[in-house]
Image (tube, rainbow, N blue to C red):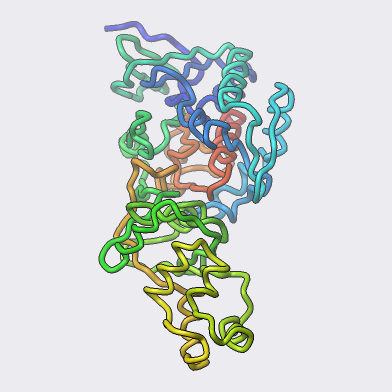
Amino acid sequence: MVRPEHHDAIILGAGGAGLMCAAVAGQRGARVAVLDHADAPGKKILISGGGRCNFTNVDAAADRYISANPHFAKSALGRYRPDDFIALVDAYGIAWHEKTLGQLFCDGSARQIVAMLLEECAKGSVALRLGNPVGEVRHADGLFLVDHGSSAFAAPTLVIATGGPSIPKLGATGFAYDLARRFGLKVVEPRPALVPLTLGGDEVLFRTLSGVATDVVARAGKARFREAALFTHKGLSGPAILQISSYWRHGEQIGIDFLPDVERDWLIAAKRERPRTTVKAVLGRMLPERLAETLAERLLASGELANLSDRILGDSERALSDWRFTPSGTEGFAKAEVTLGGISTDGLSSRTMEAKAVPGLYAIGEAVDVTGWLGGYNFQWAWASGWAAAQAMQF
């Protein structure tokens, strides 16, 4: 039997949450080992934000996150704020800029964020062990024992930071859930989130619009987001659709307002001003040409405005402001930016991220049933939950 390396804490997962937790715990004096099957750390960080890493959002607050317990994220997010991570980024001289809706990106490369986190880990003398699968995990006599390749590790503290199954090409799996269940923790059904939606049936015709984007308001239930929607060869994507996908359930409808800025009775007003023009022509001045043409053919009245009643024009307006469609599905975990659901917050302390029934066991980041909006929110949860767990560890 392999003699295990002894540490104060073992962190499973070298992603954003795991590296943050390791760095903070290490700098507090803990002997920390980070284990991962990947051959390099921070792979999701590297591809995020088009390679520039949307590393936080200045508006991060618990109401921008989805969880079975909407209050769970408040404690960690309230104690480690966007300003705290920005201060760390600034200390490393990493230039950044704010895009729309509070989203912060590196001016240069996401590699700068990974390098920063690794340097923070080095300051805490963190042992990084990559490139081997995590094998059996046991718990006995107050110690967690973990097999990692041909090595073994032991520690009184174990942190699950292996994320969810989104983007499996990067090595993502449901390992966190299997491990959590082994220790008696419940798991909220994982689903793809921030994911493109697919169209079927009558809506397949919209596939001819692949590549066309326009500003819309997307609605699902009480949730609504105003950003760009992008037609694809499979259905719909773009920020507005990715956002609303997190609130959509299979079989439900989604509503799209294609013209969120127009005033009521705008078509009727156009009829008074230009009676010989057509609905298609009016729409073509407000939307991309191919979209205007398709919507006019699919949803709206045809012919000159002068020949259409105000009632018919009113119906056309309503069709454009509340186009309803039922997605046939999503593009799944392969294209999902994050995972909805995960390790149930019922079994975790919101302050420490520690399992209530298993002292020394923690769960952080995407592995937990806390999912943020698009735009840096999920990274902020990774930093905040990792920080909270690291602050709570006893060693």
